[in-house]
Image (cartoon, rainbow, N blue to C red; front, side, top):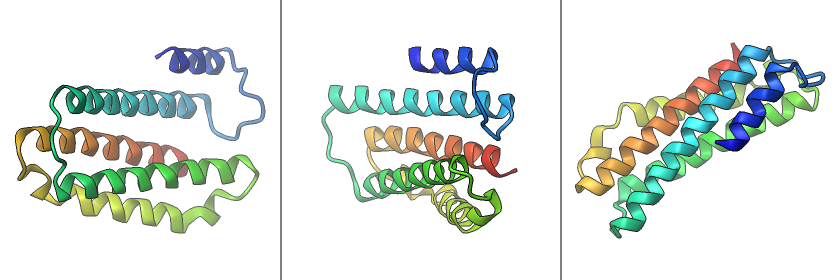
Length: 138
């Protein structure tokens, strides 16, 4: 929360240097990242309080969420280094396709209540990642 507040203050004072994204876009990205971190914190709290074996679907969803985040950071890093945003279209398509695949898969909620809860939080992280992707590209 402190890092997100620092980022927001930096954005609000327009102290972001030569970043190509608008200030509202940056503010939105910070907000989505903070929400993602809050979801991960909730996952950790429940996993520590209720040790449970993660099922196949939950592990798969963890892997997809990690990949979604990797794509977002890759796109942002390349654009910040001066690469054209439209050259990243394949990464955006990969992100969108992965998100659509998991969004339609209801098998994530077939496990016990702990796995279902974790999958619900992971799907929230995936949704937030999709919002960030849209902020970066559109």
